[in-house]
Length: 256
Image 1 (cartoon, rainbow, N blue to C red):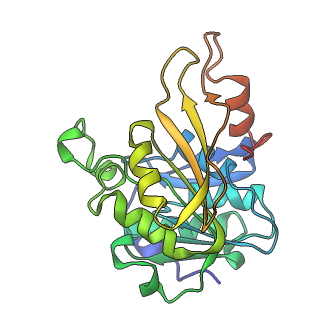
Image 2: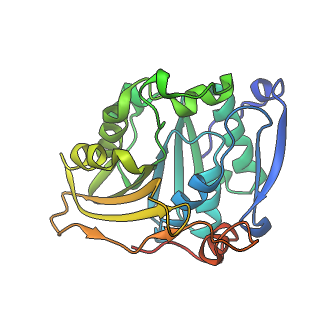
């Protein structure tokens, strides 16, 4: 069951509605500040959960990933943790807007509290798009609404620690993050997870990867697999490559 709606909190925020996955998902998010985009679409596309499985997202924002997973994966029960009360309220509203409030729970809280503080059973899937910058000096003058999404007050270790506790043994963790933090991400997740699969995300075929999608299995022991890259843009007039466009429209996923 979904948590109580935060309509009184979100009423004071200017929001706009966007259509995702070719119109299958409606998403209300703030006009100013952080707005979900390609990273959320890729993270959702990387989830191949089966009906009856349970998934939690750490730092769910307004619910862009959760709503796309809900549309892609029918019968999956969803939960989201979000410390920003306005974003959490929007996530609840978006669950109702998309008719999935009966299988979506949004919890107001912080990864720094730890998973056990939520008093929830473990999940089959734990996913996240953690804040990218631990160092405020690395930010390029973000607006106030973007600060929390870009800056990891608690550091990457708090996020990976939460995910490792949230997922059952044999469950899957999926993270999208900066490519230059791949070594840190593997070291932290490797404390309790293995069987890693890595998919580099390149802006163009002739440019280095800027993002990585990493999947790990809790207590997994299989060798690491480096998968073929996903290239987001080509040099034609199209905004996205055919592969990326198919993901954005919900016509394709990202298998492991």
